Structure formats: C-alpha cells, structure tokens
Length: 104
Image (cartoon, rainbow, N blue to C red; front, side):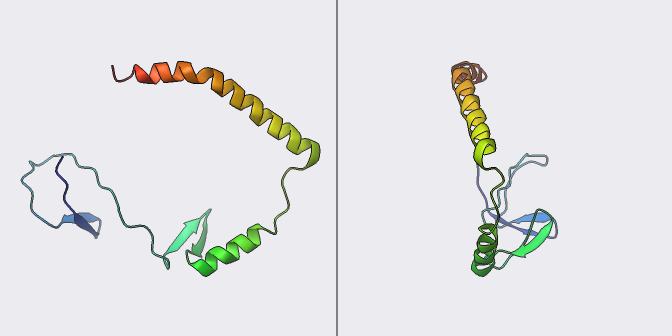
C-alpha cells in the first residue's frame, strides 16, 4: 500500500505529490478531518451548529423530555431485551464459526 495525502476541491481530490499509478488504479479515500466546532450540521432534517453552546442547549432540552416508557411497559420492554440478548448469546458460537470460515 502506498499512502499519499491530498486536498478535496471542487469535487476532486488533488494529491500533494505525484504518483506513478496506472490509470484505473482503485484507491480508497478517508477524510481525516472531523467537522470543526463551528461547522453547521444537519441532524434529522434540522440544521444546528456543532458548538459547545449548541450542544449544551440541546442537552438541556433533551433532559426536559418525559420518559417514553414507564412502569409495566418499561419492565416488559426490558424483559424482551433480556430475552433477545439470551437468544443472541446462544447463536453467537454458530455465527463466529460461520464468519471464521468466510476467509478460508
């Protein structure tokens, strides 16, 4: 593997150094830069700023929400999750065996 860096501009990646790869060489591009603290983002169709102040305001709003499930409904939901986890634990060895055989 040969790693080079570049910059994304106008829909294209411009490499910072020349390479001798033939045309048609497949490459993977990984964006190593996360959104900046002032980057506008869209979440659930709504635009919001990813700033410390915006995150704090969102958490304050979120903490005012009422629980979705309470009492017997919550207990039934937790019981079904527990049952599903137990079923998944039983299936795990078979899945691991199948995935181990994929690369053989």
